[in-house]
Image 1 (tube, rainbow, N blue to C red):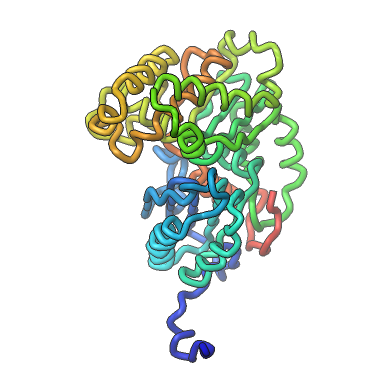
Image 2: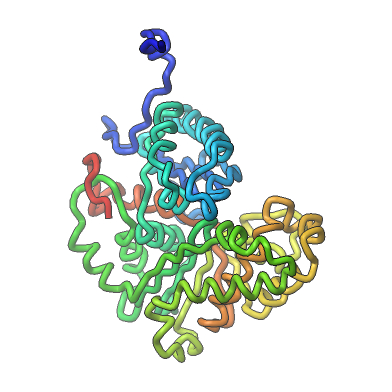
Length: 390
């Protein structure tokens, strides 16, 4: 018979990190943790001058390929091995958050935890063992956070904007209309779309911003799920073609897919791509022997170059991709799936070039937290637990 934990054991449990705790003073340090299907990523930052991260200074960061969603496509559950890997990574994140005395944090999980039947039990284990209280966000929230993360990369001349984020378990696309919005108002409009938690009501601004959304979609198709689904297809080119068709089937309900897209050829559409696939192709386009975020984030990737590099990577074969210094073992088996998704997007919306974003949900969470509490901002003041979930 097992006995209840004694007082000593209870004292050793990690203190719960409450993402909604209201600090006694204005918060100066923020944390954003994105637990995706493949990766666990953390950023800790404080407000700073506009720069590479668009208005905040990074104090600490962490990223680990935990492959949480490995096998979920086939089994419908998170495996014990994947959960153990992820909890180990989350312990490191929790220690960093405490060490930096973070005043406010946003901690989210995405597609793997949305789909897995045992995700609720896994999240309880995470809370018990690390103190992290993880929020499983909806596909719409994920799309809007990705959009907010890319806000600093918006061009003044853009009349419409599409942001896509290729994840491990899903791909989000969101399209917004910018006609008639003054350049100095665009960033506030985009950040108002980010789903927040806590802060005074900002419903009026959010309603105005939401009116600018033409459409959004979250396809339950990402690099890991595509790889798993077509793993039995031996030839890379055959697998690539099947993946592209499968992805296109899942975005057929996206409104801009159905409409006349002649405007996309007139230069009024800006496309921003946020994913490891896009940043990898961007680095290869620059000929980098070692990845350099400062050079890749915000660069322009020509459609023709993206197509050429994708074909080259497919022709290399599995061994060639693993040996390629710009790809590596971790990304070698998933880059074919990512290229299939990217190629489909660029074929449907034939902009001459896209802007590469080495940023995403974490940056969107940080931008929206800081924007909400900036001096004189619409949400300045202490948090209200559970409010404004978006």
